[in-house]
Amino acid sequence: MSLFSGQSRAAVIFALAEDDELSICDPQNILRGYEPKLKNIYFNNDNWCKPVERKAPYNSYNYIEPQENLHLDGLISYGGSSSPVYYQMWFTEHHPTLCSIGPTECWLEHAVLRLSHDIANDSSLYTGISGSFLREYASHAVRDYIVDKANQTIGLDYHIRIYPVLDAILGISKTNEEGARPIGKLTFVEPRFLDTINFLARFKSDERPPLNNFKHVRKLLQTVEHSDHTLISDGITILGIGDSRISQFHITVEFQGKLGFISAGDEKICSFQDGSYSSNTHRAKLFEVEETLLDFNLETSSRNDLFRIVANLVHNAEDKTFGCTFVLDLAKSPADTAGQILTPPLDLQNPNKLRLAGALARVDGALHIRTDLHLYSFACLLDGHRIKNENRARGARYNSALRFTAQYPETIVVVVSADRPVSIFQDGKEILSGYTGGDSSQCNLFPLPLEEWLKCG
Image: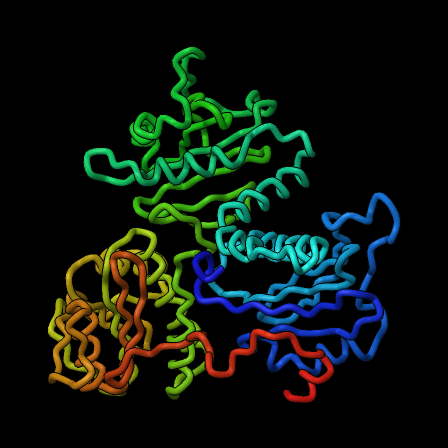
């Protein structure tokens, strides 16, 4: 799951039989801090499990009675009851950068099924295949969630085969045309809804390019680059070019060069890059900026507006895939920056001026923004004395930001790389946050009785 959603942890609470005490396997302490809620759920009431019926046709390992989601903040959970396993509830982290929790829930749902399967087959037959299969489950999770969405929206008779579609998406995304990766939209529509599509151009039935002819589809994507138009497919061939505003359930693929996104209906499901699927939105959340601004004496409204402006500028650069730098000057006296001075400064609370600032960010150098929410200069060169923690393996923007913030501690510098990573600097250091893997020395792979685990918290 870490390959799909970034560094992730997982845990499970389970009881194999109705009379067994609950056990927990939490190798990296993802559930630490939730002890009061878990105690209330499992020990202060008796309705935490809805057991499966113990009679045919429900005596098979593959019939799962879903359990109520526990809705723990910051976690995604999925549980079930089956004939071989009385109760199990799986947990993983709810990363803030998820496009959708749907594929992750499908992943956990399959973990429930695999454990039920392994217990039903008896431990003496266990081969480890379940763990191996779950490690490679990304494409299956995306497929399962899209199928679930389609079934809920238009019924079980959905005819588009999702696996070939997912394979084609990755194939097209890796196909260059004159050295460039694809840009544009490709939309898959259930055949019975094709009459509702506003086609701008349709291809002759016996000359429609097959979806698995990646080179041909890649060429056709040039016709819908940077427009509101989309290629239309029935999952087998490319039917023509249509309006991208579609009322019926559909799957839309948005190619953005090296990166792309898949949506089912109006919900963005996942992204794809370098031949694999990911849950990542590839849009910075900028928690570090938000937290660092709290350390400065700013009015709440000014702080919120400044964060909103920075987020807008960063996301504009991410979406248009160019690198840039922003200096948030929070001092009473402005920092010394050599750049193109604006007279008068641009009021970034004005939407038109904010869009102009986004365009100015393309020019080499930094934007200089002050606490009055105005842009004072652009194309600024960030200077400073050499410091110990510079990194020659990083670019000029990175090391210039280190030097500049070391010299001007009342500034925050935000650096956006052309390939979308965002770095935040303050006081001569890069600000890092998030889960780093935990303390592996305390990793316990063996289950413990839940009651005993709670006492150790």
